[in-house]
Length: 427
Image 1: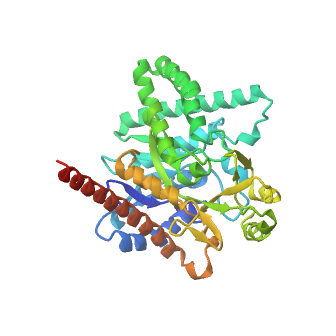
Image 2: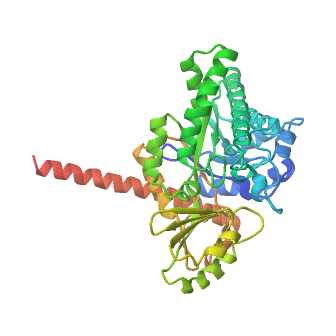
Image 3: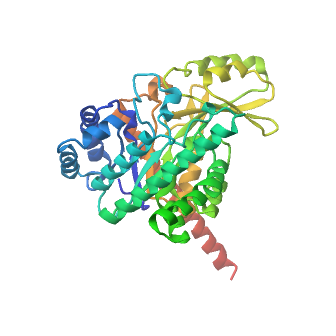
């Protein structure tokens, strides 16, 4: 939905099962029209569309795309962002590190993303830019640390495919007038997993290689080539993922802006947070609570903060639980996309305050993107008395975001009013 703050807000439909187009469309029919009526009865309602590779192929078969576009118009719905990170199955199976397959070294990942861009360009309303989030190039543990040649090859192949993608998006803009950006999503154990690695990648690899390639193959000037890359390859700022780095969001956003890297989409998501008591023998109860979340479907990386401010990263919660009694550890943050609306989960906490901080940065104009997407898909952490039917849960999440944005606006207005009063009384 389009908010008074100037942002498009939606939720990511990756929470709905459905790897074929008929299955995906069935979920959209079931959930989107009722949500629109409750949340945006008088205005169009945006969709954060997730299509598997198979569903994207099927959507382009026959008149499926035309029929879908007509259905969107009839229902008062529009698509402005897509999730192109999971290529294959994302439900009812073990995903784990397979979520990164195929990675950006492969022609399959490139073809899938170009296909999504063409679908989005066909669906996107006039005068609006579209974004597609994608994987952080590859999965870091697949690379042997001592094998520099392999790492260099992965970076080179991924970069070459991304520059080819830029050329496809430039051509798509020339043909349709639609600007589509693909938003790289850093996450724990991704080849790009934090702001420092993203900036280093742009400055040391992507921009030098991409500018040279675009000058040679498209005859662009160095400045035109640089602008094409920065326009079409942006960042998906997943708040949960950045919270796991323990970096302040104000600093992260400032560093990206200084480097010229744009944020195409903010995914509003919360990590699980656990304060660890000094008495390590009392941590058994926490371990027991957390062990219920060590499930076999997704990776749940844990980042540990110690008393000296150092970070230790574990590839999955199962491994981390073996170290919960480490005396120097004071806090864990776990890669779970838990509900946004509450900060407490049966004795555990979340990084909800990080979302509030990011929304405040948006309101102040320090973070400039129009695309906001709630990505909550771990509902089982809620106490029984907080659980609701899925549609109601999605509605509650979106209403919490709207309420929080409004609160930051009121706080800013109150601060400005106090400043004006202070200024007047001291004239």
